[in-house]
Image (tube, rainbow, N blue to C red; front, side, top):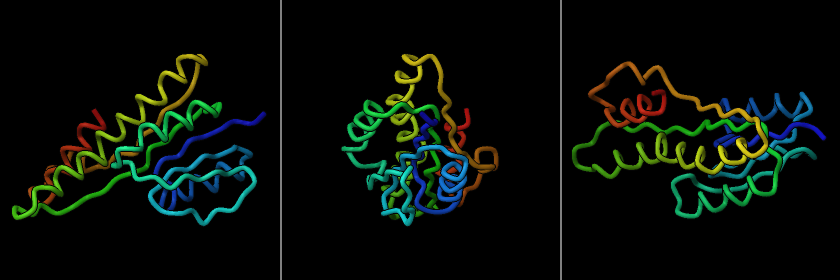
Length: 147
């Protein structure tokens, strides 16, 4: 049986390319993103789920409960410019970039502890150290993620 990776936020960008590379290397991959996947491979399963939805933790627990995952990578990240007329965007950025990453770890870590191994990787940003008045919630969420 090959290794299985769980990739969160893999429908485009770095997550998409990582999915392709892992499949080429013989991994089974389970992807979760808010949009459908363009990947059609025997070793690939995809779930459409937004990490900010209430159902995300339960969906994630169900997936982790049925798969022998050795690797989990959290690629998800959003950034918004500060808009003093709409503070809801600030909440959304922190929820997606930081809180949902923690929810992912909460679902995956017990599985890793039970099997005695596993790797969790989260992609952050250089914005974790570069304070910007134009995007304070992005900086704060990435700093929290990194630390």
